[in-house]
Image 1 (cartoon, rainbow over the protein chains, first blue to last red):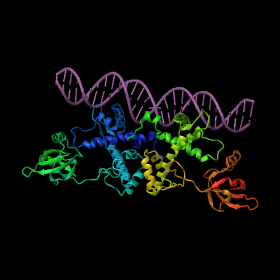
Image 2: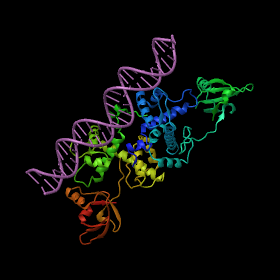
Image 3: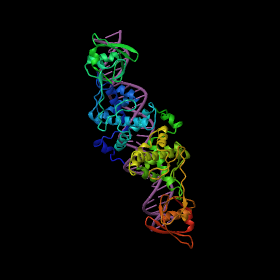
Image 4: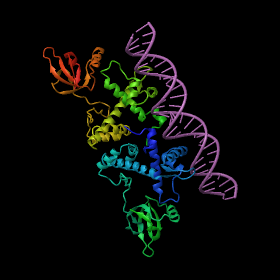
Length: 235
Length: 235
DNA sequence: CTATAAAGTTAGGTAGACCTAACAAAATAT
DNA sequence: ATATTTTGTTAGGTCTACCTAACTTTATAG
């Protein structure tokens, strides 16, 4: 039994429709993915439309509604961002998604590549209790089968150990977790290098003279100065 | 990824909306519950409306659609029944519902009375593989936490041992599972006695002279002839 | 710095699933 | 057998979430 009818929930509850949940989830995904890497804050209507596989006009309409509900910051012709409320709720959806993925993989022996599709559905099941029970049943995992971090019940993502690229071992694979310089210049450079959150890097050689690094990025070879390598956090 | 879009599914797949699933599930529930007990076959618009908590006009509209999709046999002003297809699909929903209830109760330690609400949501998850995995994970249970039988993957309900009421032990509780006389006269009498599928009965005394029974039906005392007791199957 | 392309918006339309109000048919009760 | 009640239906309206087509604003390229 749900206690929030439509009128009620609009004012008191934060009960989103399944579709609204998908919009804020996509928004969180698209923003957090590039949060530290892009020059421009926020996401465009078209990007969202592509991600959600709907037409831009549909997105536009929904953005107005989400704005009304204080889930996004939206102004005509501008990029959209999640509000704090929106982000909190999106993290809850992500939490559910990743816990379900873990459940499917660890307990039901689903393959790594099969879990996502089903978790897309399960993430919308409305029951605080259920997801807490699943969390307990899985013994409070911190990462899902893809290695993505699972937010805790407060929406906090586990802190990951990260190391500056300038200080890692040679000949070992690392994944870019974050960057510590957020200036336009740096990020623009990162974009040019096609290095983003999630990019895999392998240090081939450290040049003793100036501390610069020879890097293998999925087959592509490139050289990064120590200054740049200092600002790339990997793990 | 779903391979049935709207146009496609209407003609080739039997992919029902969540709401359609709820309608056929309710229909199965309302018909099977009284199948052997009622004089009149089928379910009325109002009954369905009450069960689904919507208005009769909404039900009416949906019945036309379900009829188009060959899920129900519906004619204006007449009682509605499920087609074979409708019943098959409804049994799949029931199967999912009861397996999820079992999962919630047995694995996640949900209380008996909490499982239904969540299972109402989980039963609509679309994944053959998921439900088969859950079935396996639970080691192929035959009954859910409420004792209701779980249809197998072919939609077949487990056969239950049943005994004629005329042959059961005294002072032991039984539940009516079925009746073996389907004549109007008998069923009408059952209705008068307010004995239906699911009714709990306790035999207090067997009269040696004519084989009639003194019965306690939830506090009410009644006497049944041997002939009647022969036609009531309990378990 | 304008012309063209890309991105975003508006208007108007559809389908599903619900509603109310008014009406018709069937069941029942006198 | 008719009056009344119950049950079922129709018509017309709402909201969500989608669409297409036409249009406007912003970005990009010559």
